[in-house]
Amino acid sequence: MNETQPSEQSHAPLGLMIVVAATVAISFSNVLTPMVYALGVNTETLLLLRLACFLVLCGAWIRFQGISLRIGRQNVLHCIGSGVAYTIGSGSLIAGFFFMPVSLVILIFYTFPLLIRLSESLLDRRPPALMEIACLLSAFLGLAICLGIGLERLNGPGLFFSILAALAVTVSFLWNGRKLKSVPSTVSTFYMAVTGFVLVLAFAPLARGWALPPTEGFAFFIVAATMLTFAGAFLGMYAGVRLIGPSRTGLIMNLEPVLTIALAVMLLGEQMSPNQFLGAALVVAAIYTAQRLPARSRPGD
Image (cartoon, rainbow, N blue to C red; front, side, top):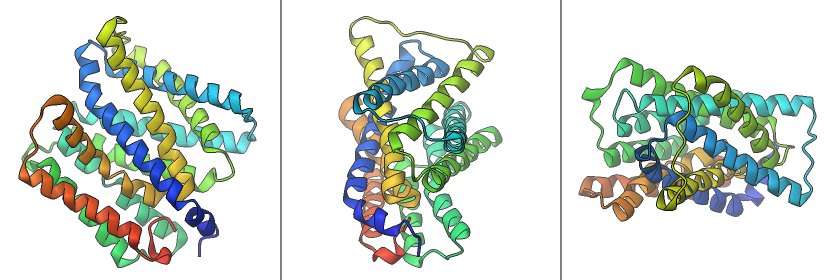
């Protein structure tokens, strides 16, 4: 039995609520992102603005709460490692959108919950329960139906970046969940965001440089909303990893594409087909079933 199991079980309700809230936040950010691009903002600038917003808010909260940033050299290095992995994952995901349809990239990326569970089983030398795998595969199938995948548009570069994104996020979640248990999630995500900020600041000029958004009226509101929703999601994801484990956090995050589609219907007037309703229902059913499994066989326990 994993020695952290009692802690994860005792914090399960709070952890579930936080991860669901984070998933809703990142879904809002996904829907708002095309609007930000339409304002002339490029990927590098958007990434930097999101991380800067998170650092300001998280730094203010840490100061207000009197939380110490002194966590020891070893923990700082673990935060940097997890932050590098997450930044690579985020950048690779966006890069994949240049080569393949967003839906296909998202489907490949969302193999990461299964990769997390299999990696944990390998590290713990304990095979996953059949129902765990069944729930993960069912959620993946639901995403495929919901996103309406066309594999004929699969190509090498898009596949490479999509797989790299899934692997990098898997590494980041596992690294954070296993090596930073003693560090408050606000502190670990602060150091991770600093790492990402420095990386983007260093490499963006080598790409396309900066493209700042307009600062008036509705444009400012859209950019601010994108930054704030990302900040909330970033903190919530890794708080969830700490409270309920990497596997369960990853599984619940399968809701993200479903919620993104639903929000696009409500906010952008897009249409949702019967197949998408069916796929969404399958994802929700898989996640609900996974949370109802006995404690000894739940992901992340």
